[in-house]
Amino acid sequence: MLEDVHPALRHVRLEPVLDTGQLSDHHSDYDLIVPLAADGRLDADGLASEANAGRVRRFEEGLTDAVGRFQRKADGHWVFHYDQHQDDDDELGFEVATERFVPGEIVSVVHHGRGHSYRVAFVRPLD
Image (cartoon, rainbow, N blue to C red; front, side, top):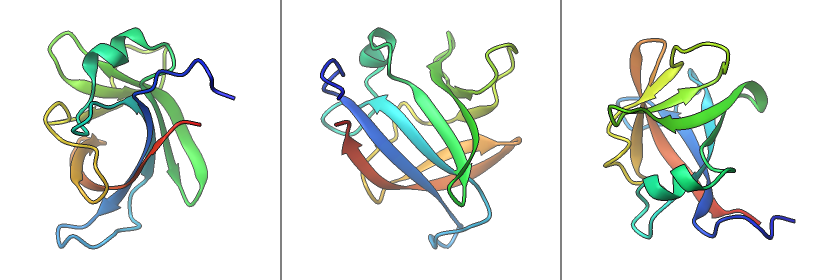
């Protein structure tokens, strides 16, 4: 049970889309555990204060490729950071501060230096 979990924490699934808006199977999916405000935007204060917040899992066909943290850098950018022993950021979420995590919305992630679009497949409370 997760009795002590912050009430704003949500499980968010991101699925890759092509430029045409169709789902694509050429890139990894993402599972995020992040605090969201009522409008679906990231709750930066909740992310900073909640020890269980800010988790990311990248996977393909159900197999986990990487697990890491979703972090806000001093310059305001949000990044996915997988290797805690390196200072380099693995992936950059751009416009994440203004994008909404609402089912059907499109958000962007830079993976291996290229921007990719992802559809928010679902947003669920943790239970």
